[in-house]
Each structure stands twice: as structure tokens, then as C-alpha cells.
Image (cartoon, rainbow, N blue to C red; front, side):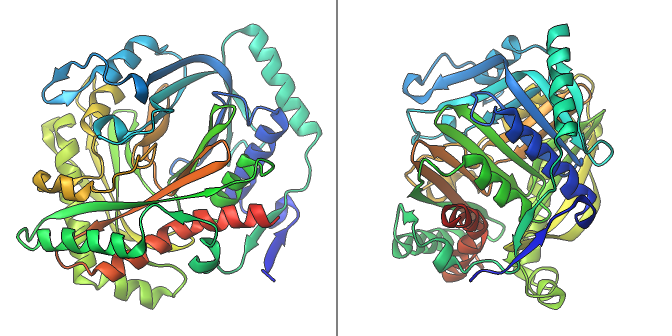
Length: 448
């Protein structure tokens, strides 16, 4: 029997848990969790939750079945998708976005759009300072009255919060029992070994390799319940999200890192690379991450490549390492985490940076990309970007540890960075550690 720690009052949980749980309670009470275009995004980097209700404006580009559409190349980047969005959104309104990397790949799900940008009718903000919420945006005066009524009802109907947290993670074998692998472990190991062999000629090379899973999900299982279970258990993630794409399609996940954040005039970039199993103690973490030459090499190479990607957008083409190699602790894995910051050049926005990102998880050198991206299944939204902008702030996050529910099927994907020093069996074990948190959340909700 799984043991749980039950927390039944506001005083028993942290300030972070309070505002997150209150936001989830509000979103559920609103009745909009299954309403197309509605979203909850928890920016743990900045310690706030945004809840968007109703579609004020939606830009959805395009269905994969309609691809390709008219692309205009600028400086080697395919920017037409983002140019269409820039011309279509209201620059004064907040926006939630979800972009798939499949628009740059040969494999895609023809039922899905490549990008969705939604601007809400109403938006609410929950934070440590305002755990019971505040109105952050309305379309008009009548929307303001509706939003005030919704918040009033939340305050009038506060119920004790109950957070059930398993004391220890489920074993992967149990959590994954009902999931199907798109390719067998043996086939995935063979792909890994081919990739590692190719990297022997590239001492400073690196590639990201991925694998896919899916399972049936009963219709009676609340999709928002799975998200909430996944997020509340998942430690020091950077951003979590839940988004209703349409009545039967939902995206949710817990990203460990941003791709970039624009805060005033500064560009902040998380570097999250190098991984070990969580829950083994500080001495283990130090041995496996801080004192491990292979992990150090992977992390330093990622700092260098990410800085080079973003420096053209910064004054003097320079970024500063302001937080070197801290340990980020998630439920199932730990990572090395660094932060680089630069001063943005004038007039640079999301629409200048985003087109340069894809493929986000690729290969160095780039001629290894066919080996890196040798998983012949759609990414859907895995490895793309999710995020939110408002006046003075833009947050774009790498869409990892995520799932996509389509009808009665849930899809998930996982990847890892591979170096020439990598061991295929160890990389396979790493994929299991990374994805087991999501699978555990699904298991718990199905069992309940």
C-alpha cells in the first residue's frame, strides 16, 4: 500500500504550495479546465501562477495536414510562422503560447497545429504575495465585473487544501506497466550505440536523442488531476502548464528550464544539463554531478553553446555567467543548473529570438542531426516551447517532462544528451528516471 503524507490546512504547507493550490482550486471551480483556450501556467522561476479563462483571441498555425504554407526565410531562419503571429496578436494583451518542434521535422501528427497562441478574455494572477488571486487582465468592463465575482466566490468558498504526496517515487517498472514503447529497449539501445560511435570523431560533440511512449487513458480520469499531481510532486521545476487545446486534447507538463526569459531589458537563460537519480543524498549528488568529469564536460559544453545562441541578441554580444553549477532537485532526477544573463539590444522581442531556437534539442556538429533525430515518431509538443508574455515580461520554457492527451490516448516522450563518453545502458536508465515522474502521476490518478 502506497504511503502518503496528508496536509489538511493552509498552515501546514509552504507559501509556494499555498498559491499554487489556490490557483488550481480556483481553476477547477471556474469550470473552464476543459474549455478550449483556457490555461494555467505556474512560473516557479518568478513565483506566480497565471490562469487564463476563455479565448479573447487565438492564433493557431497551421494544422500539420496543411503544411507547408508560405515560408519566408530571413538570415537562414524560417520566420513566417512567427511573423504571422506577430501580425495577429494584440500587443497590449497577455498571451499563452505552445509551439511544436515538428514544423522543422519530417514527422508530425496531422491532427495538431504547429503553434497555438491564445490571449484570454480574463486572466488571474496568484502569487506568494497574493495567494487568493488578483485580476491581471480583462477585455472590458463587463469582464472586470465577472472576474471580480469569480474571485469573490473563491474567497467565500475556501476549503482546506489536501496535498497527497507519496513519500518515495514509484519504481519505473510499476509506473510504466500500462505504457507502450514505440520502439523496444533493444532498438533504442542500438540507436544510442550508433550515435555514441558517431561521436567518437567529435571530441566536443553532443547530440540529443529521444524515445516515445503512449498508453490508454480512461475518459473518466480528470486530465487536470493528472497535471496537478505531476506538478505538486515535482520539486524545483522552472515552469508547469496545463492547456486545453480543444475539448478532447490537453497539453501539460513540468519543465526544468527556460529557453529564455525577458525581464525588463535583460535576457535570462537557464542551463540545465547533466543528470543523476534523485533521492540518493548530497554525497551521491556531488559525486555524480559536481565531481564527475563527463557530467562537467556536458554542462560546460551546454553553457558555451547556449551562450553562443543568445549572445547576438545582447549588447556587446556578451552574456555573463551569474550562477554556476548549482544542483536542481526534481522528484526523480537531479541536474546541474547554471544561469547566464545578458543585456538585450534595443527593440529585441520574443519574435526576434524564437525563430532561431529550432531545433532546440539538436546536434553539434549539425551534420549529426539525422542521427540525433532518428526517432521517426512525432514530437507533438515535446521539445518545443511553452510560455507566457505580459507587459515587461516574457517567459519561454522548454517543453519537457510533458504529455499530450488526445481523446483516450496519452503520449509522452523523453530525451537525453549524448557525448562520446556516454554509455548506452546508462542513458537508457536516465530516460526511465526522467519520465517516471509523469508516469507515476498518471498511475496514481488511474488507481484513485
